[in-house]
Length: 192
Image (cartoon, rainbow, N blue to C red; front, top):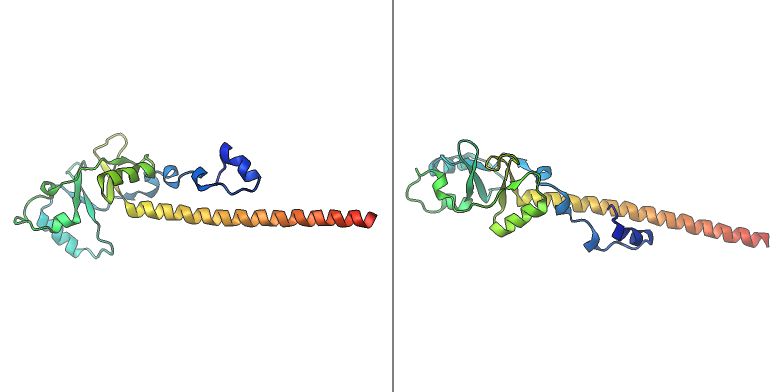
C-alpha cells in the first residue's frame, strides 16, 4: 500500500496501518478496468419467442439474471430480467422492449467501481449498462457484480502478497539490525 501523510509516521514506527486508513479498492478501480464489452445485450425489437429460442441454444455456464435492452442505434432502453422472459406471457410475439420494467441509471467507463456498486444497490440489480462518455445513450458494455467481485478479490490477493513480502523484508531487516547490535556488543566486550 502507498502510504499517505496520515499513515507514513505509523508505517515508520512499524505499526500496521488500520484498515480504515487504506485506500478503498473500489474507489481506485474504474469501470473500464473491469468492463466486459458487449455481452448480455438484446435488441428491443426481438420477440419474446426469438429470445427464448436463442437462450435455449446457448450453452451458458452462468445464466444471466438481467439483460440490457438496446434499440437499433444501440441506445439503452432498459433492463429485462431473466425471470420476466420466462414468466407467463400469452403472446410470445411481443417485442421484448414491452416487457422492460427496470430503467437503472447507466454508468460511465470512467466512473469508479464504488459508484457502480452504489448504483447497483440503489436499483437492486446485478448488472448495469456502461455508456459512452460523449453519448450517454449508446451502450458500450455491461458491468455485472461478478466482474466487481472478481476485481475486488484480485485486489485483496495482490494486497495479501504485498503485505507478506513487506513483512518478510521488515523481519529480515530487524534480524540484520539485531545481528549488528550483537556484533557491536561483542566487539566492545573484547576491547575491554
